[in-house]
Image 1 (cartoon, helix red, strand yellow):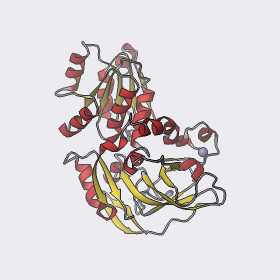
Image 2 (cartoon, protein in one colour):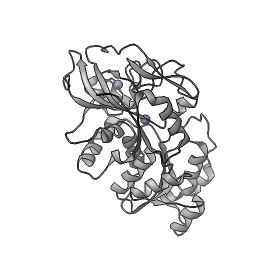
Image 3 (cartoon, helix red, strand yellow):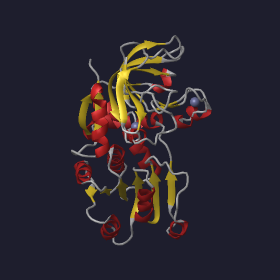
Image 4 (cartoon, protein in one colour):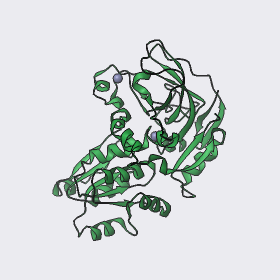
Length: 347
Ligand code: ZN
Ligand code: ZN
């Protein structure tokens, strides 16, 4: 089959790779109909991936159709229309039992697709899905493929970030970083009862897109503007969706007294110059983590089918899979109003 593979910084190739094999009696094979490019894929694209070496297929967001299931799969059959959550778990260990799939203890089954050689990437014609009953979700009738695709990772991660921020009714929430995850965090915060969401990003078109979702774009210096808009108090909750030291520092600055800072951007810093004095004086809460997609979907699927959340709205660009290298270049450039990039496969 064909897949996008990583060979080095800015070197993504569309090439032939081995067909996925059924990963045991609990596994399934899914023919991919569309795949997303995620902000975290840009870490790999930029040459600072997650230790996976090179030559592996990439991507961790897919929707498609089940084509094969193992004998122990109870909930799925060939022909089912499914989304594959980006977080993969064994379904048997204690963290999986609690829904914290990202912390699955069974190395080899748990993890993420497309960050190394262990689990093949989703930007491919097909994927092997371990423990299918745990790692596939049926797409509700009437839900678009685009909505389902954003529900594999970006929407749950944004929702999780907002949830960790423990938004109370009427809170003023700031979202720092308005890529797909930040946009979904902004939409989530409004659903959770924020009185307003102030949207911070350097790129004009990203602030405009957040405004389309009901947020208030912060023009000018975010520190000055957020203070001005909150009567000098700062925000109740700040959700950070970039992962860079500078933006995490900004998020900490923008939180007011007893504020809560929730970081879901992927940090690659083993150390960080955290201003403990400032945090203590403000009585800040600081949370950071990785989303277990399966744990968030019970809320997000009905919010999407009811129309209160529209994950598909953030899709701005689509390419055929073979144009993947161009799609990566566009997404990395942040040009042309790009938010979510989808790779389509022939039916
Ligand atoms: Zn992702
Ligand atoms: Zn597990």
